[in-house]
Length: 239
Image (cartoon, rainbow, N blue to C red; front, side):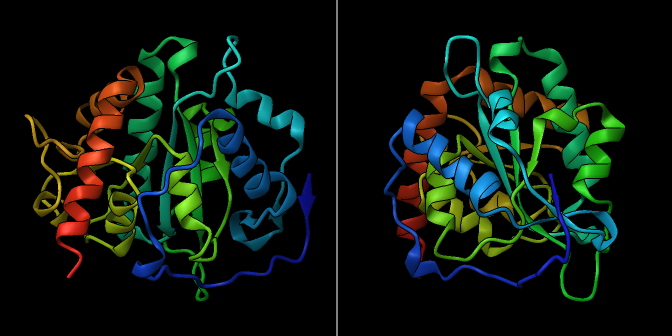
């Protein structure tokens, strides 16, 4: 269902709105997704040709046959080349191809073109080219007060950005473990292994990044442990 006349809004989050308060699982998470995608859609189609909206029937794709939500991975940002979305979507698709249906992730895109227009391929186009259009949901730019609930409902935050934006810290302080790439500022925030692990780091290559995404999808207890560690680290370094 397409809604014409998009209304883009440039929104960034304020740090003091973010807490460790995690959304209660299944029911509350499903409610967050429905609000973002069905009742309050803000996704913008490629080339500003309209708005993206979903129906309740579309959300059936986020559930497993056992009535559980598939792993939910969120990306937040603006469609610029520095976000390296082709790398991000290629890795996401590669990870999905290695996983059984019950563990295949869903990607929630929170962001869109800035006010001057896109500087990168649109996630909708990339998803179609990679054969995963049903696994990518575009929620559009969201108000900063919405993002704690988004991160609380997600299983992980994924970024391939060349520069470390506020969204990485915002996800971590909300208890959402990050997946990021080496050679960026994320290396200063993320511990990749051991007792203090608070996220995942991978080389900026689709195969290596896909392996990290797959680890997140198959290890719910570990992603919860790393999410708690991420929030602890972010609170200790918030100043």
